[in-house]
Length: 339
Image 1 (spheres, helix red, strand yellow):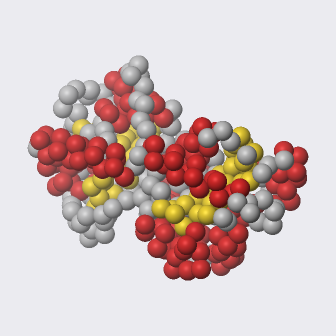
Image 2 (cartoon, one colour):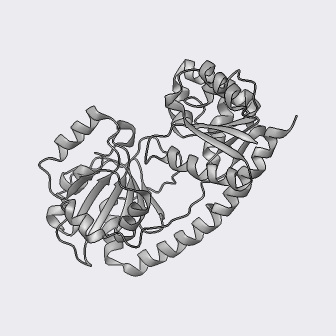
Image 3 (spheres, one colour):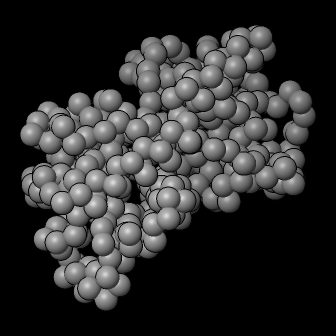
């Protein structure tokens, strides 16, 4: 089949990474997959002309509103993948909610990354529950073995490179929904409220949520080996300026522009932990613990960290199989050929 694949494709974002991976799954099955950035297409009419010119047989979208709306009324069978902000944020807008319902009604199938996303969608559109399939994101890591992490970190302002260094990495585009400033006061200030926390190297999830305000001394000042590196594209220029202003006079927190995925994975291997402070996150689990206390414990108990990493590897292999993801999408796309 010739498949038109629409998704928000801002560089170095989750949707872009996911779209490229799904594209590879479809092409491996022999389909011709034309991946387009939904933000560059102005209307369903423009997409209709594209479908006519390229003679697409079917469509696939990531994000029910941003991409799905462009296939409405265009006459080709299509499938949809929930993007995250569509089900978490866009449902709050009446017009977007209506459009998403129409997309879900027309779609031959829909994919949710987690059972929670499926349950939320089913509450909004119970008539569509039978077509929503749960397929966790597949994970395949290929860190760049030639990447010089020491030089990279030193250029970012982290000068004390040693085996005792504890670098926490927050990977996100600089926009408000990702809340990158949330952790800053923990490392270089005095307050903590809530946090999503992942142990590094194999993405194991420990998460902190809904903590009450607690006065804390500056962690980096007490422990100079502790640093927070915020890495990602500067998506929102106005908010980026706010972040830069906040960090301009602080020690222990570093703002770094995005780097290629393979290089980023090499940095993750070098780091102590990866954290996530998003206010709208559909792919995390939660425990109620205090961030600094848990982090210090991991720093002092290497056997505990090794145990968590081992468990993480097992969890990823079982629940985020890249091979199973490929099989699922190849099977679902066959529904687009059914009459």
